Length: 226
Image (cartoon, rainbow, N blue to C red; front, side):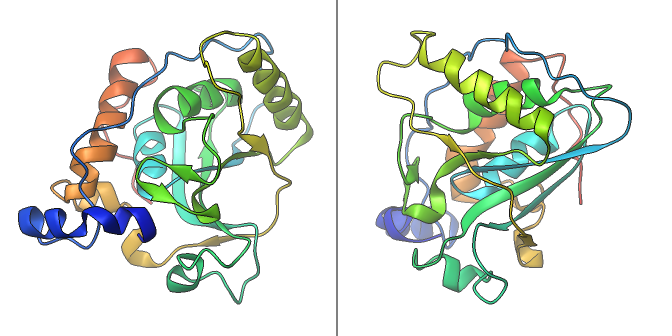
């Protein structure tokens, strides 16, 4: 990635030879509350989009979540022409790094995915940054793709604001679903393919471990590959 992630580049290269930062400490984990507004979803697969910083970690967590059949890293919010890693990384597009999650509501509901998202993936009090990564391309947002998801997302954000779990204001918002553009092949299943990458070890493996610890019934030891 770029910008603040590049601040630790020398250390990461020294340890792993990798191209991304490997900060010394992972983000904190918050046991977000169970949703009061339960998603009412019928049979059949559903799709939702989540942006929450570097898409490697978002993809890794959801790829270890039971009921998720696909988690694709990509770009959301901008144009097809600008949906390329080197362009998005400039921070000059409307895109956010995002993950398109396809799931089976019989195994995991949308409200549970949102709870997982705010527990172990994204800090909702940060604006245009997550972890070591800074810029609008790293903004956290919920992107519902249907009316039921939208209702759940609105209710959950309202619930978060009155929960008292976060001392700072909740800044994560809801974005209207636009075209989603899958990222380059080398970004897909990145954590699975590169478990010893400095960035994965420092930032994303702890998120997966937190998923297992907080939500053992939703955790799957198998990585759902694309």
